[in-house]
Length: 185
Image 1 (tube, rainbow, N blue to C red):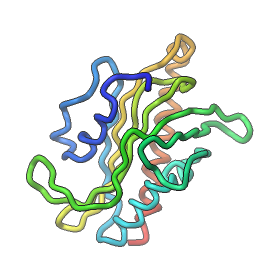
Image 2: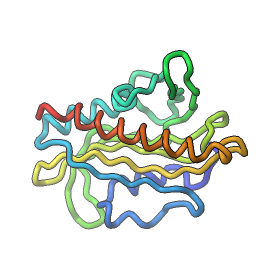
Image 3: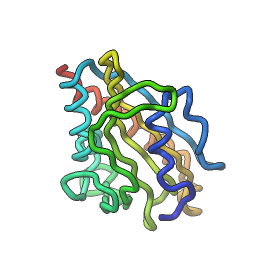
Protein backbone atom coordinates (compact mmCIF):
# COMPACT_ATOMS: atom_id res chain seq x y z
CA UNK A 1 0.00 0.00 0.00
CA UNK A 2 1.23 3.49 -0.73
CA UNK A 3 -0.60 5.77 1.73
CA UNK A 4 -0.97 6.28 5.54
CA UNK A 5 -3.72 5.14 7.94
CA UNK A 6 -4.49 1.91 6.08
CA UNK A 7 -7.94 0.60 7.02
CA UNK A 8 -9.12 3.75 8.82
CA UNK A 9 -12.17 4.03 6.54
CA UNK A 10 -13.78 1.06 8.31
CA UNK A 11 -14.11 2.87 11.63
CA UNK A 12 -15.23 6.05 9.91
CA UNK A 13 -17.85 4.20 7.82
CA UNK A 14 -19.34 2.47 10.87
CA UNK A 15 -19.85 5.63 12.90
CA UNK A 16 -22.46 8.31 12.43
CA UNK A 17 -21.34 10.96 9.89
CA UNK A 18 -21.34 13.52 12.69
CA UNK A 19 -18.98 11.37 14.79
CA UNK A 20 -16.38 10.45 12.17
CA UNK A 21 -13.78 13.20 12.65
CA UNK A 22 -11.04 10.97 14.08
CA UNK A 23 -8.58 9.01 11.99
CA UNK A 24 -8.47 10.98 8.77
CA UNK A 25 -4.89 11.35 7.52
CA UNK A 26 -3.60 14.92 7.21
CA UNK A 27 -3.18 16.46 3.76
CA UNK A 28 -5.77 14.31 1.96
CA UNK A 29 -9.07 15.36 0.37
CA UNK A 30 -11.97 13.73 2.25
CA UNK A 31 -15.31 12.39 1.12
CA UNK A 32 -17.94 11.34 3.66
CA UNK A 33 -21.39 10.85 2.16
CA UNK A 34 -24.39 9.20 3.77
CA UNK A 35 -27.57 8.69 1.75
CA UNK A 36 -30.77 6.92 2.77
CA UNK A 37 -31.61 4.63 -0.16
CA UNK A 38 -34.38 2.41 1.18
CA UNK A 39 -36.13 0.80 4.10
CA UNK A 40 -36.14 -2.70 5.48
CA UNK A 41 -34.09 -5.85 5.42
CA UNK A 42 -34.63 -6.61 1.70
CA UNK A 43 -33.21 -3.19 0.74
CA UNK A 44 -30.26 -3.68 3.10
CA UNK A 45 -29.57 -7.19 1.76
CA UNK A 46 -29.72 -6.02 -1.87
CA UNK A 47 -27.41 -3.07 -1.23
CA UNK A 48 -24.97 -5.15 0.84
CA UNK A 49 -24.78 -7.84 -1.85
CA UNK A 50 -24.29 -5.19 -4.56
CA UNK A 51 -21.43 -3.68 -2.60
CA UNK A 52 -19.73 -6.98 -1.80
CA UNK A 53 -19.95 -8.21 -5.44
CA UNK A 54 -18.66 -5.02 -7.11
CA UNK A 55 -22.05 -4.10 -8.59
CA UNK A 56 -21.78 -0.64 -7.05
CA UNK A 57 -18.72 0.01 -9.27
CA UNK A 58 -20.17 -1.63 -12.38
CA UNK A 59 -23.46 0.28 -12.10
CA UNK A 60 -21.42 3.48 -11.69
CA UNK A 61 -19.87 2.84 -15.13
CA UNK A 62 -16.54 1.30 -14.13
CA UNK A 63 -15.15 -1.95 -15.46
CA UNK A 64 -13.97 -4.27 -12.71
CA UNK A 65 -11.48 -7.14 -12.75
CA UNK A 66 -11.68 -8.78 -9.34
CA UNK A 67 -12.64 -11.95 -7.48
CA UNK A 68 -16.38 -12.60 -7.12
CA UNK A 69 -16.56 -10.98 -3.66
CA UNK A 70 -14.68 -8.28 -1.82
CA UNK A 71 -12.38 -10.03 0.64
CA UNK A 72 -9.29 -8.78 2.46
CA UNK A 73 -6.27 -8.97 0.17
CA UNK A 74 -8.30 -9.14 -3.06
CA UNK A 75 -6.63 -7.23 -5.88
CA UNK A 76 -8.97 -5.12 -7.99
CA UNK A 77 -8.36 -3.23 -11.21
CA UNK A 78 -11.14 -0.84 -12.09
CA UNK A 79 -11.25 0.86 -15.45
CA UNK A 80 -12.35 4.47 -15.64
CA UNK A 81 -13.03 6.12 -18.99
CA UNK A 82 -15.01 5.62 -22.17
CA UNK A 83 -15.01 2.54 -24.37
CA UNK A 84 -11.52 1.17 -24.95
CA UNK A 85 -9.97 4.35 -23.48
CA UNK A 86 -9.94 3.36 -19.84
CA UNK A 87 -7.40 4.23 -17.18
CA UNK A 88 -6.60 1.15 -15.07
CA UNK A 89 -6.72 1.92 -11.37
CA UNK A 90 -5.27 -0.91 -9.20
CA UNK A 91 -6.41 -1.31 -5.61
CA UNK A 92 -6.37 -3.89 -2.84
CA UNK A 93 -9.16 -4.61 -0.36
CA UNK A 94 -7.87 -3.68 3.11
CA UNK A 95 -11.00 -4.56 5.08
CA UNK A 96 -14.24 -6.40 4.33
CA UNK A 97 -17.27 -7.00 6.51
CA UNK A 98 -20.05 -9.38 5.51
CA UNK A 99 -23.56 -8.40 6.73
CA UNK A 100 -23.78 -8.58 10.53
CA UNK A 101 -25.23 -6.79 13.54
CA UNK A 102 -22.87 -4.47 15.38
CA UNK A 103 -22.95 -1.63 17.89
CA UNK A 104 -21.54 1.80 17.08
CA UNK A 105 -19.60 3.88 19.60
CA UNK A 106 -22.78 5.90 20.28
CA UNK A 107 -24.50 2.68 21.41
CA UNK A 108 -26.76 2.39 18.37
CA UNK A 109 -27.22 -1.11 17.02
CA UNK A 110 -26.95 -1.37 13.24
CA UNK A 111 -26.74 -3.93 10.49
CA UNK A 112 -23.49 -3.30 8.62
CA UNK A 113 -21.74 -4.62 5.51
CA UNK A 114 -19.06 -3.22 3.26
CA UNK A 115 -15.43 -3.00 2.33
CA UNK A 116 -12.60 -0.56 1.85
CA UNK A 117 -9.84 -0.68 -0.71
CA UNK A 118 -6.63 1.23 -1.03
CA UNK A 119 -4.54 2.40 -3.93
CA UNK A 120 -1.59 0.41 -5.23
CA UNK A 121 1.38 1.61 -7.29
CA UNK A 122 0.11 2.51 -10.75
CA UNK A 123 -3.01 4.22 -9.41
CA UNK A 124 -2.94 7.97 -10.18
CA UNK A 125 -4.08 8.78 -6.63
CA UNK A 126 -2.99 7.79 -3.13
CA UNK A 127 -5.70 6.88 -0.65
CA UNK A 128 -8.55 4.66 0.37
CA UNK A 129 -12.24 4.37 -0.44
CA UNK A 130 -14.97 2.50 1.43
CA UNK A 131 -18.50 1.45 0.57
CA UNK A 132 -20.98 0.47 3.27
CA UNK A 133 -24.59 -0.62 3.64
CA UNK A 134 -26.09 0.30 7.00
CA UNK A 135 -29.54 -0.42 8.38
CA UNK A 136 -30.55 1.43 11.53
CA UNK A 137 -32.85 0.06 14.24
CA UNK A 138 -35.74 1.96 12.60
CA UNK A 139 -35.15 0.04 9.35
CA UNK A 140 -33.70 2.97 7.38
CA UNK A 141 -31.10 1.72 4.89
CA UNK A 142 -28.16 4.00 4.17
CA UNK A 143 -25.33 3.90 1.65
CA UNK A 144 -22.14 5.33 3.10
CA UNK A 145 -19.19 6.37 0.92
CA UNK A 146 -16.01 7.31 2.76
CA UNK A 147 -12.74 8.18 1.03
CA UNK A 148 -9.53 10.11 1.32
CA UNK A 149 -7.16 10.81 -1.55
CA UNK A 150 -4.52 13.04 -3.04
CA UNK A 151 -2.60 13.01 -6.33
CA UNK A 152 0.05 10.32 -6.44
CA UNK A 153 2.38 11.84 -9.01
CA UNK A 154 3.33 15.12 -10.65
CA UNK A 155 1.19 14.24 -13.67
CA UNK A 156 -1.76 13.55 -11.35
CA UNK A 157 -1.15 16.87 -9.56
CA UNK A 158 -1.11 18.75 -12.87
CA UNK A 159 -4.29 16.97 -13.91
CA UNK A 160 -6.00 17.39 -10.54
CA UNK A 161 -8.79 19.71 -11.82
CA UNK A 162 -9.78 17.05 -14.36
CA UNK A 163 -9.37 14.30 -11.76
CA UNK A 164 -11.66 16.19 -9.36
CA UNK A 165 -14.36 16.36 -12.04
CA UNK A 166 -13.93 12.66 -12.76
CA UNK A 167 -14.14 11.81 -9.04
CA UNK A 168 -17.36 13.81 -8.71
CA UNK A 169 -18.84 11.97 -11.70
CA UNK A 170 -17.90 8.57 -10.28
CA UNK A 171 -19.29 9.57 -6.87
CA UNK A 172 -22.62 10.51 -8.48
CA UNK A 173 -22.51 7.13 -10.21
CA UNK A 174 -21.99 5.35 -6.88
CA UNK A 175 -24.93 7.20 -5.30
CA UNK A 176 -27.20 6.37 -8.25
CA UNK A 177 -26.02 2.75 -8.16
CA UNK A 178 -26.85 2.50 -4.44
CA UNK A 179 -30.32 3.92 -5.07
CA UNK A 180 -30.82 1.42 -7.88
CA UNK A 181 -29.61 -1.57 -5.83
CA UNK A 182 -31.88 -0.79 -2.85
CA UNK A 183 -34.61 0.94 -4.87
CA UNK A 184 -37.14 -1.82 -5.17
CA UNK A 185 -37.59 -2.05 -1.41
